[in-house]
Amino acid sequence: MKRRHLLVSTAALPWLGLPTAPTWAQTAPATAFDAALANTNPAQAAQAWLNTEQVDGLRELRQVGIAQFRVMFATQGVGSASASGGIGSGSGSASMHGRYVLAGVDEALMQSITDSAYERFGQSLQARGLTVVPFEGLPAAARERMAGVAVPAPAELKRGQGRGQSKEYKLFSAKGLPLYFGVSDPLRQHMGFGVSLSGIGWDSVEYAEAGVAGPEQVGLLKVTLVMDFVQMETSGGFFSSTASVGAEPGIRLTEESSLRAMVPKGLEEKPKPGGGTVWTTPTFSFDKMPVMTLKHTLQPANSGLIGVTDTTHTGVAAFQTAMQVVGLLGGLGGGRKDKRYEVAVDPVQYQAAASSTMGAVLDTWAAQIGAAR
Image (tube, rainbow, N blue to C red):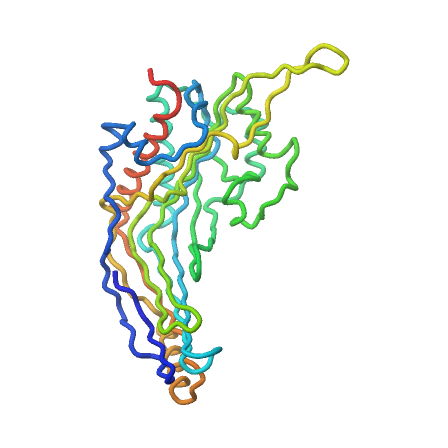
């Protein structure tokens, strides 16, 4: 990996060269993904990949329903940095802005990857001897409530990733499943809903989900997979002598990927104030139920990465030149350098790498549900 540096001087030398096209290499490549690991030794795969919380209840499940299956693809990564050789924005100050855009993967391919992963997960659960209840087989009231709060797919999200960084994503739902967000959903705040408890009530989606996972019904599963393509790095700051924006390209399934579950609970018997008993159902919430996540970001051995090309628009380049002249003649500041890079992948290889990686992870997750028979 080669980072792009902007040198800033206290002697009003705003631009001292910047490579026009980067040379890419991974100085510390991630461990290559081994799909055979899940097929030959799922227990070893689970130990290597899984963080788990409260998963004991998953072993008791005999039938499950998949209420949510989402795949989130990063499509753009943005990084910015600034530096100043003096106080304020006088001579010697400058900033950098780098945008990295995924190319070669269209929405049709993203939807296909999502649907294939969903089908693979269902097959893995069935191979465990579990009965997989289709979404259409869930209670009508629950399906109507989930559909009532759904948003069109794909949904677009923008998230901050740290100082001077952000990522843009497209979020897909498997065909036949609504793309919806519960109150406790970690993605909800990025959809413009905000995090609010105002929707809590007997008609909220959480209660609809709990009804599905009620006594003698099905364990309800919600899956989110996050596919990234570039790791951003930025440096610089006030009084810094250099500012740089760099990136390490490579397809990745990140540790944000998760499976969350509701498991059936037995009815509880409580006494009535005037005598006798009443049967009640325990309260359900996805933030208190079994969760499985990845311990590590996984990078497929063959991601289909073709290369990275500088595609900076000529209008931006002309603006940069004008700012350089102002900085040199007037000492009014170094200005800003905007760069745009296209991270190209081969769509066939990308699909193969994403599908094999997701599939092996989903197989490993499925192996933790129900009792093998």
